Image (cartoon, rainbow, N blue to C red; front, side):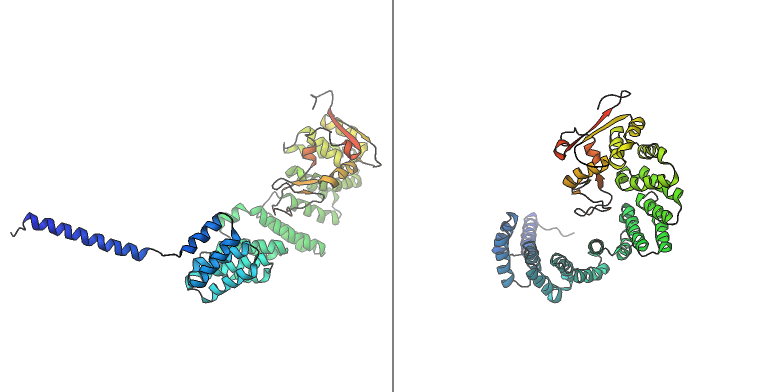
Amino acid sequence: MFALPPLILGFAFIAVGIACWHLGRRAARARTVRLPRDYYVGLDHLINDRFDRAAEVFARVAESNGDTAEIQFALGSLFRRRGEVDRAIAVHTRIKEEGAAAVRDQAAFALGLDYLSAGLMDRAERLFEELGASRQYRNDALEHLLRIYEQQGDWANALKIFHELPADVQSERRRVAAHYLCELAEHAILQGDAERARALLRQVQSHDEALPRAAILTARLLEAADDTRGAFDLYLRALRDDPGLALEVIPRVSNLAERMGRKGELVEDLYRSLGEAGRLSSRQLAWLLVTTLPAAEAHRIEGVTGERVTAEATVDASTLGALLARIGAAGGRYQCEQCGLNSVGWYWRCPKCRTWDSMLPAVFKWAERTDAAAPAAGYTLHIKSSTRGAAT
């Protein structure tokens, strides 16, 4: 068997090593993306929030490197953030029409965001609908379509898009879909189509069996059909499921109780329904009842809740609820627990942060405070524990 001398083998190994090193360097140089110096200058401006200067640099780079898609996208995003939506639209339109096929979906999505910023909802809607067939941007496009339809109050299309979302997302947002159906049911009630409203409310059960809003709408239908007892029970069920609805529901319950001849048992019925969930303290319950019932019911509230309620008013008002409403007019009868928005009126969905079921009566917080703010409103309101309980 032929054997090479050790010296020749050594030279051979060295030659192979040198050849591999040279080949590696050539491959590395081929993989290196050479970006212009201005690109890094622009990134520095961007990182340090110097958007005007960054936009100037990227515009200059884009002119000399028109085929660099990343630079074009960065420039378009900068224009949008600066409010120069027309320029952003021009940049992303050019990429969508003339760019490589690999970046056209990205350009279409960016263009949809531009149209949203410009308030061109119909154009944004068309682009996001097209992107529904894209694997990469489908879910993001569906989310933006949902926001568009919610903003426009197009609940039927919002519900349609909801059913196209991934199964895990649908499971997380079942209550949102139930609200879509309730919005459609309310519209049917306004149009006098009670049958369609009932059908929509039955569909709510498949998404959220315990949605208080569905109970309230069903109660309204029963009330219109003169089923007073059925409506009364459903209103109380809604209060059990969500005591935060008290300011809206209790006046309806009070009216039905009077029609049924149950005015004397009303405070007990309300206290039992509101307290059943165990979410409210006796003080909060007392404040809710004081806010919504006539002043003549104060002694009954004390007997049921164990909280002594007295009022000294220096303004002409027939009920403590009217007095508290005047506080609400200044600071809001309701407050969003998500974003803190104060509102005089009730909303199922916060107008600011767009969160469902987040508006709570401000009375929940008033109940835990002292009466320091009351004199400024022209009256004092005192809720103290009776002799049966500890002072609060």
